[in-house]
Image (cartoon, rainbow, N blue to C red; front, side, top):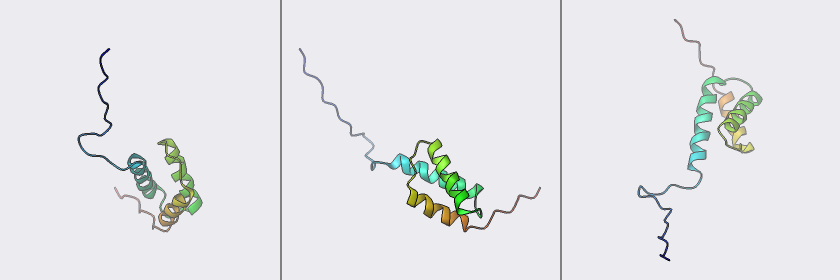
Length: 83
């Protein structure tokens, strides 16, 4: 029987910290919600963040969602585009 070749999980391009994909997804959702829900109540913003995070497979951290919701709800609404 021949010996098995060694298996390495290190990629040639370097390594990234654990959880980097989750943070990219969180950033994407927060940016998206900040464009659509700014100026609305914190509860509505927090619900939108939680719903969209769940849709991309991320379990929401309650404290972070509350911080993001507070910041987004304090932003002024984007005026409608004129044609």
